[in-house]
Length: 294
Image (cartoon, rainbow, N blue to C red; front, side):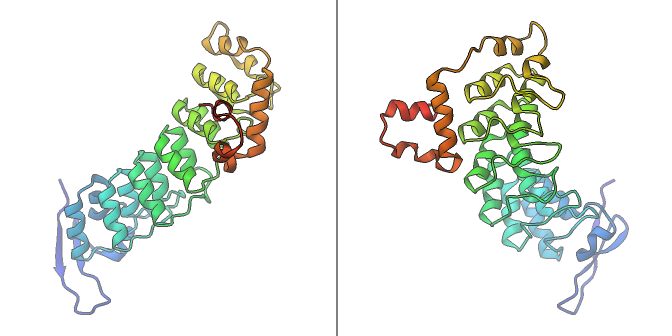
């Protein structure tokens, strides 16, 4: 049975909040996390019910009401990908830097839902792009969910493209593990280091282990080392399944040509932050396009 919310008293003092009955229990809206994991405010935000959200705020629910796990309504709006609800909450003072007990932020949830509109909104409110919790990194979440537009927004706001975290590795490694081809391509074109993975495991090891033949081809195009060894001393070829498309992709590649080696060297010398300046170099357009994989 759906719980019924009823206002039972109005407080005469301006610093007090109305007392509500929800599910048979009294609740001050500022202390909602002490009696329930989720409030009507959380539900309205997650379901994208903007009018109901407005009504609840007008009734006295605090915009940053938290659950016991410190999840805010803004967390829920972003997880549901509801831009209008997220904007309303932020316009009413919601904390853009709210962090749950698991280290999750509204920005992380926006990346998880794949809502580029919510990601852009949160970033425009100066949300921190970094993470203090290794399992809740926005850029890693966008990469592994293959949400390319969210990923590119994070990079445009200065997210660390090669941030390596324990267990999860770099965003490129996470994308390879998830066979997220669109984000693998976006990261490589944006200058991600094809050699950096998770410890001694390279992105190529990850792609081979997940049977991502198309991703293996991409990584090799961008200079991945097919002879690199992981902590167990195994090369990507060692990890490949006999007669598989992945093994065929690895075996058909011969030594890199001189032009490829030059491209890898120039791109690494420029670095990710200067790749966009390639067009200003005094080079023929065909060579500029070659350097940018266009």
